[in-house]
Amino acid sequence: MQEPKLAVPSRRLETPAGEVLIFSNAEQASAIAAARVAAIIRLLTSTNGKAVVGLPTGGTPVEFYKGLVAKHRAGELSFRDVTTYNLDEYYPISPCDPQSYRSYMHRHLFANLDIAPNHAHVLDGSVPEPFVAEHCRMYEHWIEADGGLDLQVLGIGRNGHIGFNEPSDVSSDEARATRTRLVSLHPVTRADAALDFGGEERNVPPHALTMGIGTILAARSIVVLAFGSNKAQALAGALSGSVSATLPASLLQTVGGRVTWFVDESAAADLK
Ligand code: PGA
Image (cartoon, rainbow, N blue to C red; front, side, top):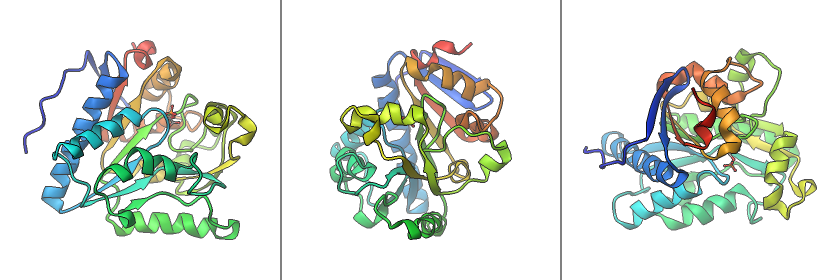
């Protein structure tokens, strides 16, 4: 299949954490990441009959999702044979809450293309507490039954988290073994999320359900989006700092051959 004609990144780096494509702004990086992901989905669905894709939320992927929806509306991309698994969800939260990631995904993607409702999976923030561990195990089981993630799209947090895998002082081997589970949110994450919850950090749910670092790293291909100067420090550490669970994104260095980063010049400011 012919890859769409793509604009050229202003810089390209090879790093221990993978290939880094640097664009002059986030809009351009998002459009090109969307074109790349659309091409991967077309290739997978035409050769395997299906694609299994992990998806992120937050401010970063909004333009990326617009790009996917535009391609769908132009008749260039179908999600008929795509199954998606979102990275994470707040806990507790109702799926109907406008702040839930289920609502976010419905608004930005699922309602705007042809994905089947039972192929678009988001962890459920309304599962009763005694059943959370079982729900997380089932999520892993569904991914496995679908043949594993072909592609995981990721953002990174200002504190270097991936999904809601927050900085931690466990060993990197322990971090790499983590799977979908209930976690507590880091103060930086709750501060960054406050704007979405009426500007009040105390309104941000204290916990979240998240794919583990092990779940993410098992994906056969990984695309990471990072935009803006507030990501510069985490990005530089993730790409070439030491591999440590204190900066979860640095664990991507253990699978660098499968990772492509789409970043803007502001996020790349601290890269050599
Ligand atoms: P953001 O979050 O896109 O809202 O900056 C990214 C992340 O925390 O993964």
